[in-house]
Image (spheres, rainbow, N blue to C red):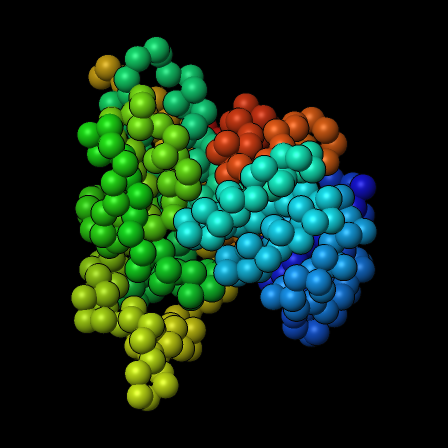
Amino acid sequence: MSVVVLGAGIVGSAAIWDLKRRGFEVAVADADPESVVRASRRFDVAASVMDVSDLDEVRAGLSPHDAVVSAVPYRFGVVVAQAAIDTGTHYADFGGNPAVVARQKEMDASAAEAGLMIVPDCGLAPGVANVMATQLIEEADPGPIDSVQIRVGALPQVPVGSLGYQLAFNAAGLINEYAEPCEVIDGGKYATVEPLTRFETVEWDGWGPLEAFSTAGGTSSMCSLHTDVVSHLEYKTLRFPGHGNVFRAMLELGMFNEDRGASGVSPRDLLLETLNASLPRDQPDLVLVRAWIDQGGVRKGMQIEDVEQDGFTALARTTAFPATALIDLVVSGSISRPGVKTMNEAITGDELVPQLAPVNINVERF
C-alpha cells in the first residue's frame, strides 16, 4: 500500500516518518526542488516536484497511490481533493478554513459514489481536538448538554518577548485564524463571534496561567452538527498572557486588511513579512489540548500535553500523526465511511486514540 505526502515541510516530514513507521510505501511531492531533495535523502522515499495548483499535474501525481496526505496550504484543498476523487485516492488534509471545507463538502456525492474517504480538518485543531470533544458528546447521558468547550495551544516552552510566541507554522495561517469569524453555538443556535474576543484565564499545571480567546476554524463542522443537543459550544486558542490583546490591536488598526491599494502592498502583506522576519523559531515547543463537556452539573473531559520527540516538534507530531493514523485505518479497511467528512465525522475517539499511543501522544481523561 502506498501513500503520497504533498508538502515536505515540518508537518509533511512528520507524516512521512509515521507512514513509513506504519509500513507504507511513501512518496513525497513539493513545489520546492530543494525541499524535495532534502526529504528524499532524509527518509529514503521517492520524491518529485509538483505544482499543486495544476489539477492535471496533481492527478498524475496521485494516481499511483492508495491515499494522499495533503500538507500544503489550505487554499489548494479544493484542487487536491478533486484530484483525489478523480484518481480513486483516499484523502486527508489539515484544513482550518471553513470556506474551503464547505467547497470540499460539495464533492460528497462524488466521493461516496467512488467509495472514497475525503477527510479535511485532520490535524490538531481542527482535528484530534474535535474528535475528543465529539467522543465526549457521544458518551454523554441522554438529554441536553449544557456546554462543550475546546482549548488548544501550540506554544514555546519558554515565552519570549511581549507576544510570548514563536512562529511554529505558516504566518498566513496564524493571521487567518485571528482574522475570520469564529463559529460557535450560543443558546442552542449556530452563531459567529469576532476573533480575538471572549478572553479568559486558563490554569494549566506547569505551564499556566495562560489566556484563551476566540479564533476561527477550530470548531470544524461541530457547530452545524450539534445544535440539537448542545446549548453552548466554542473553541479558543491558548497563548501566554498579553498575546491576544496585541493582535487584537493590530486587527482594529487594519493590519489584517488584504487590500493592496495604489502601493501594491497590503497591510497584511507587510504584517506577514514582519512576522516571518522577526518572530523566533525552532525553540522547544509545547502543545496543550483540553476538551470537556458540562452536563447536569458534571464535567467530563480529555486532554493532551505533548512536547517534541523523535526529531519532530510537538506541533508537527500532534498535527501529522492523527492524519496518518486515520489514513492507516482507511487504507487497511478498518474504517469505511465514504464521502467528504471532517475528521470528527470520519473517525471516533475510541478508534483514533489507541493509534496515537505508540508515538507517545497520550490522551488523559478527567
